[in-house]
Length: 330
Ligand SMILES: Nc1ncnc2c1ncn2[C@@H]1O[C@H](COP(=O)(O)OP(=O)(O)OP(=O)(O)O)[C@@H](O)[C@H]1O
Image 1 (cartoon, rainbow, N blue to C red):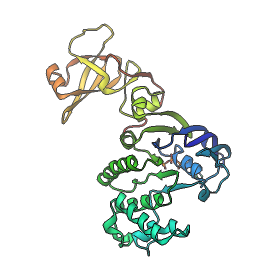
Image 2 (cartoon, rainbow, N blue to C red):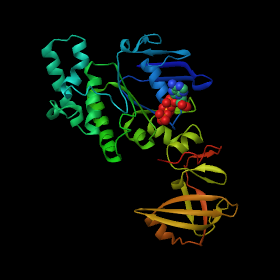
Image 3 (cartoon, rainbow, N blue to C red):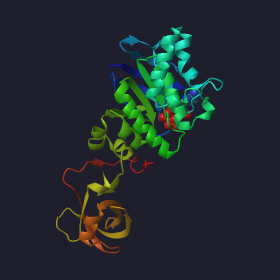
């Protein structure tokens, strides 16, 4: 394991931001810290970086107890949402900075900067100032700068958070490819489920200062530990008082199964290949169902018509608590 977080608790006054957090982050992987705003993701990243100190618990990085080490002694690189570049220095100088203060030979610095700028596709911008770059290019420069000193761990706090959706998506794909080339252990904070599912090898779901679940994107989606994780990583509705995904519900226009729930189609929304039904059941539940267009057309569903709903075989079903429905997809 590259990072071992053991029994970490962090309070700000009376407020408990992290409570007995235990996480192992594997070497060479891309791990996302995912959760709703205020859940404690950034605090955990800052405790790993040494920018905050935990009230109790330990942090081990690459087998070394780093709990009391200063940030610059932990061999970690960081990139934040709003990256503070040296405005008066060129892109190349910004990337070279960490190597220069370490007094590396000039030739080695020049070669390394060239290699890094190529890696982040900024080689043609080496002589520009940061203000002459786009937001996405500036974040790529920040990554090159963080990678320059060959950190054993790269910590990214919503690195693309301030960028527009399209650039964000491009950089997300780019980060995945970069990681496949460089393989440095990377931990990145995001509140965006899609980003976490698309990019990471492993996801740590954090809510209210606690770890809800750790797993691969598939494990979290297919075997959520609780209804919070289930609702945070995809859409969820309730059927017969239980949480279920809208696409895991079978719709029939005749009462084929005795445990089927009868209801009336209140609304039909057609979006591309997908058809969304809102069904009001006899028990007064509002159930959301997702079907393919082909299936919906084949069934001949119509607003005001009666349908019978059953969970599909193999559907993930959870008892509900108050958290279901509280975290819609963003
Ligand atoms: N320096 C501080 N002083 C007091 N409270 C703080 C401090 N830093 C963080 N907190 C509180 O700790 C909680 C966790 O904050 P944190 O930034 O870790 O959340 P997050 O999951 O990263 O959220 P976001 O996605 O909004 O950044 C929040 O309620 C926040 O207000």
